[in-house]
Length: 118
Image (tube, rainbow, N blue to C red; front, side, top):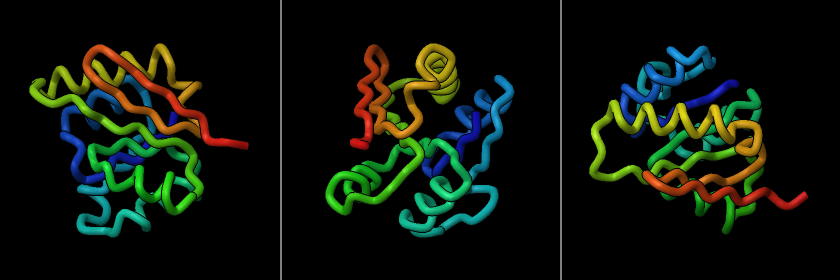
């Protein structure tokens, strides 16, 4: 799968996704400081799932009705970055296809998937 990880995503999550064979663009490496709107536009245009810890993307999607290819909002507070990476990869393995065109809330013991209306 193809991902773009927002710059607030812990590096071990990026590394874990790459180690699992995914194509991952990391904002912290390519364009730090880029606006959320531009990150979302890039992810959508390149058909990448956006992985973020920034709740502002929910605002863009639900209030501004912005198009997206899929957003995974990480709410993995209190875990080590390595554990966050393992949980993220496990969720992608188990549910990744469902993440496309959805807004996903990924928590330690729960995944909520909200499909974008057609």
